[in-house]
Image (cartoon, rainbow, N blue to C red; front, side, top):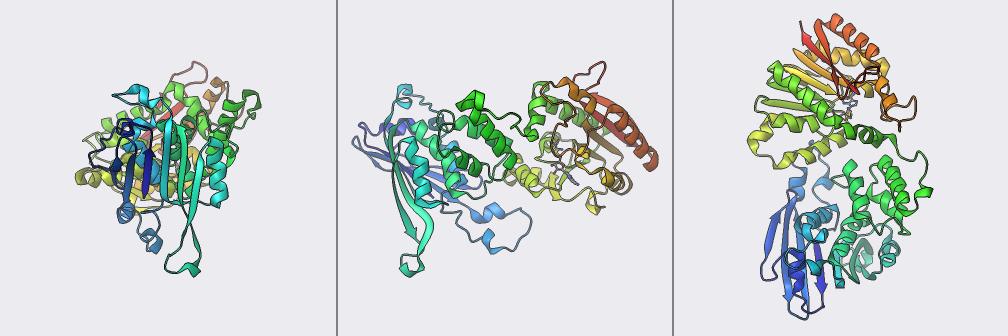
Length: 464
Ligand code: SAH
């Protein structure tokens, strides 16, 4: 895929300063999913053009994933159609320019110049009309021509791909920001990197133009299309940017409420720190992270030599894919990668792959299980996997009253099936320990309140 940026503002070779890439050199960058090359087919005082050519490795992308025999994994448009990969490349290869920094000539970055950007193969779901409805309100002149499916066979009709040129007098940072956000929006295909921080990116990168854009809702919906809850939250926050009084009451979904509430306490760090300390002290070498999510604990475990086998399991394939991304699993040196395994599975079913470990962590997972199925989980962990040490954390419901912004009686997360009081947790944990031959002790995590206790409660089970 190819992104071409030109200017005809003399001295046009200033584009080299702006992009932090010398016009006389061809440079290549390894991006994990492929290679990016930057070169200038023309560089004169009158006109300068920089090309960003992205060479995606489609086979490399599927390597290491769960086996699949779908041809579409190997034969698809990803290598040539502009997609979220191009946005990632913009951020990594033109990072300073995207942020409006220009080391040698700072004044250049803030000066609007006539700029033209061309994308040769942009898949546009919604066609030319949508394309224009997105770029034109931002002040761009748009030229678009639809690519035929195959030039040799015009009777086959047209493809969903467009060759698009947009042109405007603006700063390079603005142009790159619009492309960064909008390319995946047109493509409307799966992002490979969606997570809660994507919404932050959208809000930050959309600052000053997205809140007032007539297609704001569609842009946001498509950008976050695999995260409907983030979509609602993003819209609420964009509404705040635009007109604070119009922000919908309660529009903020609870999914991120948990993170927002807990952030000032850096509770997540304290929780991981405590779990890590327990695992370290247990002397465990082979550890399980059950319900590993995006792999936050695994990232910490990886740093410690003590753990020579680390297996993360989750029921959500999406979470595992994010873990692969976030841990940089595909790019790890072979020895590092050999220590780590991510497996797809459910804590509801006995699983031989969980046997033979020294310790298991179950961090903020139990409250996602349906109460009638808790007994299945108990057997899976304590009867069949039976690690000598198991450390389990869960929210302490009593602490919720300390968060004024959490409506009375509400749980911290919409997927929480319950949140236990301390007494409820103690009763459950003591019951389990008694039934399966473990001893259990309890630890409070986070700032402890005299009356309601700490926000997170931890049970440490040791085989007696
Ligand atoms: N331990 C992680 C994630 C906590 S969120 C962390 O602390 O960041 C809860 C996780 O439990 C989610 O990733 C969810 O997919 C997973 N989960 C829920 N039910 C599960 C089940 N039955 N088996 C395995 N994982 C489950």
